[in-house]
Length: 418
Image (cartoon, rainbow, N blue to C red; front, side):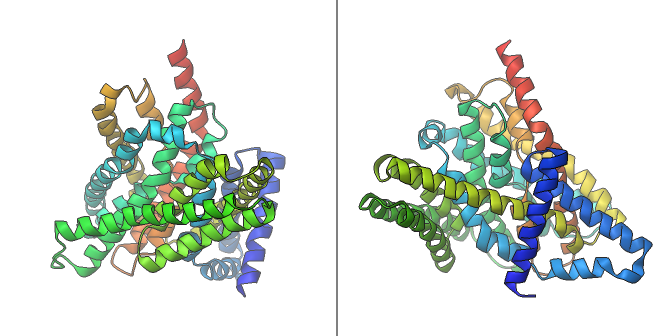
């Protein structure tokens, strides 16, 4: 099958499942689509068990196997999704809560990585599943960042206050870039072995190059696009400029070995705020927003469809299933602690209101980024275990946390106002 054939099949399935969700389930679009895709996948597996002569599972598995999820998301869809998400975020709100967002996206991710890594290392070993501590920490790094695609999609349907929404959105937009940098470092250390000799200076320089280099690239590319937008008034060309900005920025970040996600977020924030205020007419703003909203919806649909279909790429054993179920409360506990510490340190600034720890803990949805990162891991003893556990945590996060987040926020906020 060609790339066009695969893309055609995915868009067709996304449209079909999206229609079924809107017509019958009436769930949030991304969650409903993923649930239908997952249910369809499980149905195929069940039918294959009953009538193995049709080889349905092999046919679907071969189709899914042709899709490089990591390549499709991390080097294709992610840049568009992050830019589209950042484009609609108010920079003034982010700046007002910059200390909270920065602490959650950095200190919070590091704490969660360490807690999750060490806890899962002992869980796996108690279950008789051998895995090195470094790869357990790798799991902590890939499962700790909240997925901005999933989080922003859910927040659109809630009545969250602007202050809380800014904190949750800002953290989710930036912590995936930080998490990816930590992930790359830990994978390099795990692959090289304990004698690699990675110094604190080397790690610090690598982190600064990736994170701050990505932010600088995003600012330079975004400001250059802003100047181009300001000099003309033609919405067709201006939409094309924003599209070129996203594609060039991510490609340049990849060539320079700096963080593409952070670059896209910074570029999106600049165009979505400074660009809209000083470089675009009302007509252009309308077309740019509609274009990127449509891109966001289409790619979201395909992404969550892929998550539902990825079950064919995973080996499930009983011990993997039990370990994955034990990892779910472990990840939630690590999230709770990693949120509580920065919040505790910032209480004196009046940054957080009552009940915010529970909301931030439960809004820490994991999604496609975690699945893409675990699929990018090189072969090693325990890779299938990490893949199964990641998938189980992501399913729980999107389905259970995603469907209950809105009622939780409404209940907590109504309790505060009473």
